[in-house]
Length: 394
Ligand SMILES: C[S@@+](CC[C@H](N)C(=O)[O-])C[C@H]1O[C@@H](n2cnc3c(N)ncnc32)[C@H](O)[C@@H]1O
View 1 (spheres, rainbow, N blue to C red):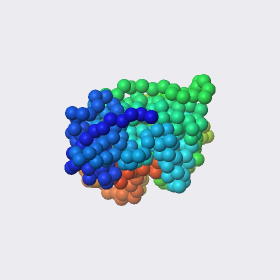
View 2: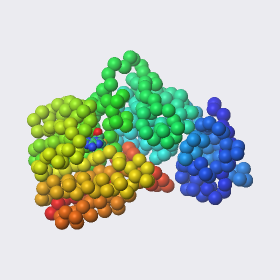
View 3: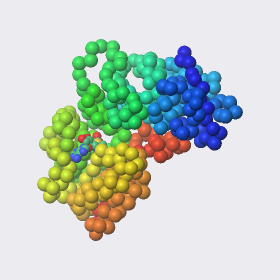
């Protein structure tokens, strides 16, 4: 059993906790008695009334992430088993294939800062909260008990770790057998994909686009499709299998393009799907073709609020270009992966670009992250990050 320390916060922040908000910021706590290192803590108000318990990081702006509002609830392996089973149940009830999905989306699954992606028998974990690593042993033991996986990997190699002063690290934390292959095969929307769980982006695959890929599969039959920033071919392969006449996938990562080609082959798409390793800007300068359907899913240009203005400018320039590249009656699709950019700002980028181009269009679909990345109502701004917009050109 881990021992906890007590932390006090002033009464004015209590309401937010009562509403189910799971973060307490560093300026909200009384630092005099607070632990000097990452710790498991109980939180009290100034009248010594218990509020919640959670993990504390003195080096992070998000100082405390709440694990429980119940004083008597123990934070141990059983606790994590119950929380993970709850997340599994939620997904099963929504018809999600729980062998291939995000099993824990942090705060939204009441497992703050903990991302767990399942690729069949391989599970990949990421700690967005350094303090949550206090319970690493219990979390891994819970995952082993529930899923009996072949292997559990930690992928703590992403830039947000630096903000929390957390070390970068990755590696196998548990395996039944010697692991010899970086690649894992998954099923996704009736297609097969190879995922590089060791070196791929994030944990290897973008499960979050499932609903938007499903949408794309409905509009591409007999169409010529351009998939910009295609990574390992998520949208391209789905489009090819859905009957697109031709698909061109473009990405600047050579490793992603190699895997995209493999993924096309695995799904018997040998003729009409091609992949090009190239920077988007260069591709747009060199390629003058127009396409029926364009998908543009760039990386996030916004790491913090201060990047927002420049990011909107950069998105706008490319969107303007791509709207011109979409055929009359074609469909342009744009995805923004950024917590700091609001839905209306994505709509604005598209509308302003249409206006500048003297083009007209209809917004026929808007989407967000898939159901295995639930948006937690008391923390919408913190848990909703993906915006997807689809425009039918007049
Ligand atoms: C969000 S991911 C795309 C995910 C992909 N659409 C999928 O469904 O799996 C962004 C991709 O953009 C690529 N990328 C980043 N900068 C780029 C650039 N300047 N030109 C081309 N590709 C770029 C990255 O290599 C990455 O694969």
